[in-house]
Length: 331
Image (cartoon, rainbow, N blue to C red; front, side):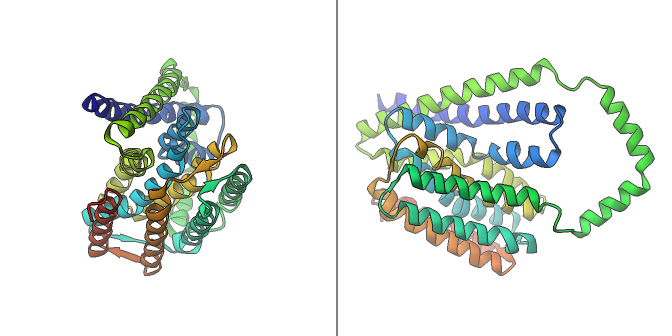
């Protein structure tokens, strides 16, 4: 019977991740058509995309009566994003270059967000008031990102401005032709609907499989969430970051992780926390939180050095193996 629920778990996880892609593809296209700027679409819809599986599964966990999954999932995802995703991306890409923009803004924000998250969870639960604080913090970060998006002018921005100026007549002509093409198709709404339904069903059966496997294998639901669910829901980040690392687009590979980790700590925990108090199970509190803090500190130190080398990526992966071994009492 356990094998059946393992299969259900794998299928549900696959449906959850794939449905998030469908939903966001439809939402992104519709958002652009109704007049939202590409930047806003990118920050909200695309930025939300890689963390949507964690958010939906956390809501379902609350409504299914297993709220300990929420914090375990978020903590496990953050650990997987740094040690597994960054580690593997660095090993495959041989090195990742950390830009000045990331050092000046994203690294401090990640450190602050992690410190706040650990402080909130230190009493082994996240209350309504603490959830509000997390959400307000994310709101400030989001507003700052939008309001200050033009503050930093890069060399690429200058080159793009020159190109646009030289080719303004041609760009205007092409834009008019594109504007004449019907841009919203029935397929977009179909993707939106299929993604929403798939997300709900995938998350529902994912949580049910965790509950059943926890009972059958005598493993805490939090342990399954901090490992299996966290790895599965981090697959979008893994795909994006590895692909970017291979293409030598380090800022995309790392920026994806910064945004996802902040969203996990502040929103994936904050929103479900408005509906009920979120407890931390023993393993998440005693192992998960310290490892997340250590992994984030290691990531920040590596980032300040401006480069993450292949040997550092390999070290990240070794630490992740030790983390898994410790959770299951193998070490």
